[in-house]
Image (cartoon, rainbow, N blue to C red):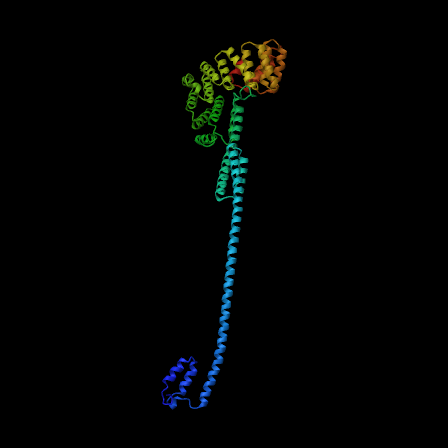
Length: 491
């Protein structure tokens, strides 16, 4: 069939034989019916076969390379899978290790926080206990320790410790300011007590000018001079001290001293300042009545049924005011009631003794003065006035004993030496009296009352009249307007 030019069957068999396309195409070309479609010569066919064989070697080499590459890729994939598994295992181990470490660290942190929390709580409780007891140094130390310990505790505890420390610090500062003020107030009140004519234990008779000076020094030393600035400004400084009643009472005593030395302007200024910061309306009424000499107003207050409900300072001021305006009987009655309310107050007792004396009730006055010797044994003024009242009653021996007891305590008290001289003269013991007068002049040469005593005792000694006159003139020179001195010199 191929010889007749029919190659269809041969082409089918070549297509199905499975040979390479190059060989089947060469075979079909050789069977082509047209001469020009067939290879020109056997040499051309041989050359095509050689080319085919050569291509087989190339394809074989390429196959080997491709196989090698495939193997390499497979190995790399295997190694990659192995490395991935290894890395996954490492990651798992790392995660597990990190978790275990975190758990351990968290547990340790929790233990530390729990321990620190317990210590912080204990320190805070300690700070609270010391704070309630106003032991601020210890409270500050405890709260500071709590803040330091809280650095290892929870955030809540840190905040709580910081807040507590801030509060303790603030309260400690407030307490320190209050303590400084309290110490300053104690110092001020002690100085004012020394200045007060009634409470000045070692100063007799009353030197009102000295009292005025001592009052001014006491207030000025604490920045409370009532004469500085306006009355309202001075009152504000007083009020901020927190002891208004005590300071008002001191100003009342100072006002009395200024009245006695004739300083009416100074007296009015002190009364004005007192009224501005002293909230007690009754004391304000008493001051106005004293300034106006209104005995009826003071007497009405003294007879008030609610009198004994008033503060001690009010009762003292009222008693002093009644005496000041000459209402001696009302003063004595009112002070008796007040003294029963405050039996241990020596000022009320002394004011009553003086009111009784001025009312002419010397025996009762003497009893009060003798009681005062037990109530205020360290007061020179009590010895002096008690002995003087006994002299007034003619109880010269008792008066002598009181003066000698006083001089055992205050051997350089010139006035008391003079009083003892009077007691001795009254008993006819002129020589002893003269010795006491000499001591009186030695210790109190500028006291007009002492000079008056000196003149009286010298007159009792024959031949010493000129000395007596000289002593009397000195007394008048020292106190030219003193009624007591003038009366003494006249006698």
